[in-house]
Image 1 (tube, rainbow, N blue to C red):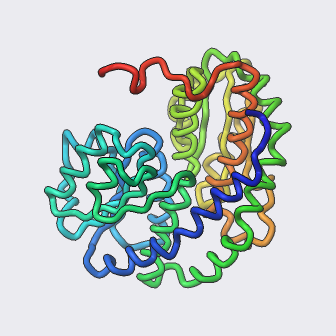
Image 2 (cartoon, rainbow, N blue to C red; image 1 turned 180 degrees about the vertical axis):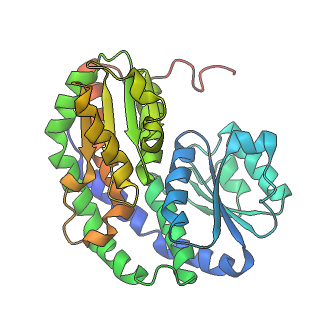
Length: 330
């Protein structure tokens, strides 16, 4: 569907923001009983874990780490114990690797907060705390992270920040998505037949880069891609870029912006088929400039939403269609 469903979008963002009271109550009760914070996921949820740990690691002295559920199930992690607080997310609440990981986490003594969309699912029943609301996974993760940092005196303007988000974020993201519509159409038209497309990003946008390449273009559009961290671009990938190589650079506004800009400044020297998407090009009215780095991943998602809508319409390929995922045993 190409049309932007604005009211539905606004309801989804407002609904996620309205969960903050529930999140605060859980974090406030658990904070004194945990020494470290683990974000665990797989696929798209793993990407959200990567985003959240980047967000926290430059701000918090708390031990924070991300685990891939399948890797944890096979290898374990000795950092996980009775004073570990784990955050997970799942749409269906039935993902095999996640169900096994929660069992293993509990065996290690950890407690788990799950953002599980289906409240009657196995995962919803297995976690220690469950919040069920679909959409805006990254926003829910970041609200949890921010509350932990607030309680430790590491986010002193927490109340001011969230007052701005409550008042302005839904409309700001909706405005960005509408502003990106024509760009999304032209981008989709230009790249719908790419044999291989490279996506590059850094900071909180690296998780977005990874997720967009794998979960959207590969899984949903069936277009071959590669995602790479901008910090690693100059240690291999640059050698395979030529005039016709399709490359898109995601540029955010957090502390790793300069890593993505370095790639963006290099590409014109060797490539005629690159695109730079910079979240700084999209205003967020009513939100202070100093907070935009915290929200760059949400702005980028607003832009890529329009690419996806037009790509689906132009290609005729339904994004819900799967060849293998949950269609067969593997």
